[in-house]
Length: 111
Image 1: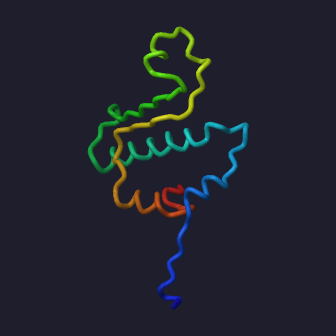
Image 2 (image 1 turned 90 degrees about the horizontal axis):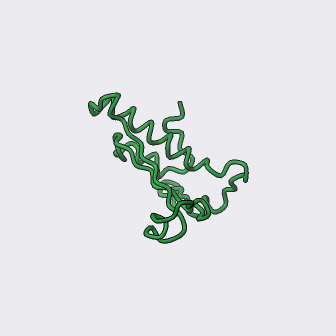
Image 3 (image 1 turned 120 degrees about the vertical axis):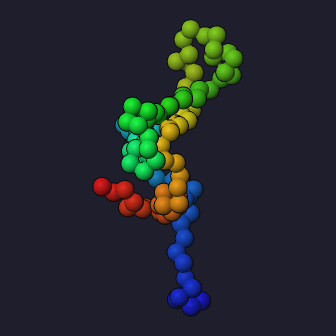
């Protein structure tokens, strides 16, 4: 293989599996998602005309158990949260952000 044709790659799924999250910081991925949403909203304010008061982040907690059962329970905390859905009305995954997203250990938006 010629050196000019060599393109480094990264197995992101395996990198995630190999990354250890300390037991004391289980919500760090959620904080990262919220941070990304805030950046996306700030970008939309600068570039897409979003008004400051219109920025929105919605966090949905998904729990074990059927939604119809959970809806009728007074104490759903016995059913653990297994994941989150985070939505925002920011700039979205534009080309620049997509390039950074697929780059392992990117320094995009490091500031």
